Image 1: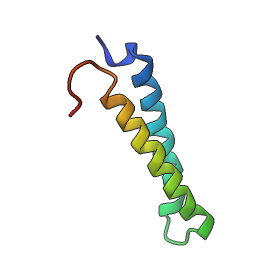
Image 2: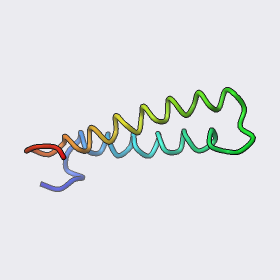
Image 3: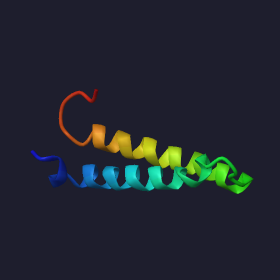
Amino acid sequence: MGLLSSKKAVIGMALMIVGTLTMLPGMLPNAAQVMSYALAVGAGALTLGTWLVGTSEGGRPV
């Protein structure tokens, strides 16, 4: 079974991309306080996406 054939894996990959892009503005040197809140949202999306990709296949997730 391929990685792209699982709906759970595709959603997870999309969340990983969105989470990474959400975190980028908050990592800039002169970021505003509001952008640091985006770090928490981005980290949550990245974590959820990673979990979805990791558990999309059968067997034990690593």
